[in-house]
Image (tube, rainbow, N blue to C red; front, side):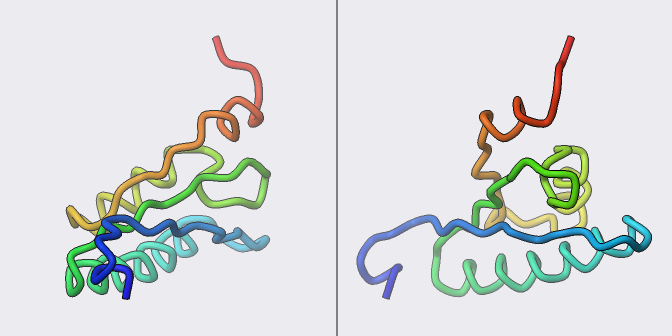
Length: 93
């Protein structure tokens, strides 16, 4: 329906970390995103991962999304980058 209406992008995000090891959890997020990117490729639309602030949120520290994007390696996966959530993560400088 979205592709038929000319919608080119869809927003994803909302993965959370549990108290376990981080790297296997990032691998699981990458697997989820790989499936969404494949679905996007099937319909000609692109997924954008939305980052949220919070200590348990995937994408709060943007390094974890870089790892996800490298693992998925698809032009159908991008970032719906929210600078407000990045600033909320703490002081920079």
